[in-house]
Amino acid sequence: QKEVEQDPGPLSVPEGAIVSLNCTYSNSAFQYFMWYRQYSRKGPELLMYTYSSGNKEDGRFTAQVDKSSKYISLFIRDSQPSDSATYLCAMKASGTYKYIFGTGTRLKVLA
Amino acid sequence: SQTIHQWPATLVQPVGSPLSLECTVEGTSNPNLYWYRQAAGRGLQLLFYSVGIGQISSEVPQNLSASRPQDRQFILSSKKLLLSDSGFYLCAWSAPGGLLYEQYFGPGTRLTVT
Image: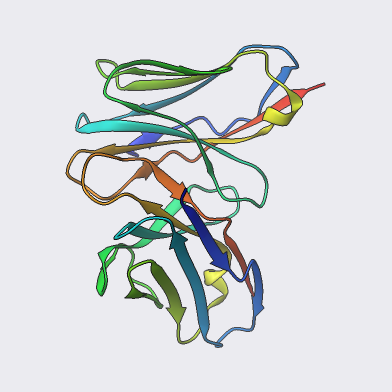
């Protein structure tokens, strides 16, 4: 079993839709959670980062962590064609240097 | 603000040739540095990380090596490339200590071994 599971997609939605991207994990020691956006042939760009459980909002993006269910989500409101990219989740345990990544979900927002 | 550079951006090398990819970080001191490889349609594979000058941890035994000759410089090398070394190589940094945990990536180097 992988430490982090992420549906590879592709996920296709119409412009303006609310997008929900998710990751599940198995290691209860993970405390730091991140979401990255990666455009084709580019490096990943850090979108959101959260510590432990709860919600964090930044503009159209909301990151949600449910440690009891070992489940994290990224919501994108009013999705735009420019949001079309691969979204990677990442997580880290306290006291470690290694980050564990999901394989990424490819999102397509259709105009 | 901090920036991270990688070069070259693209590279085409024949099998058996040597490799040297460079990564530098500006605007921070004593960063943790990382090399990842991303194969087409696959996730990020951690290759090496470094928490200080001369300190290298290897995650995957293979024909690649890494060095950190200066505080903000991280180099990925190979003496003889294999076809399987093709991929997108990403350098990343995170702040030292435990107060900040975000990791930031460079623009990447696309390596094709022919």
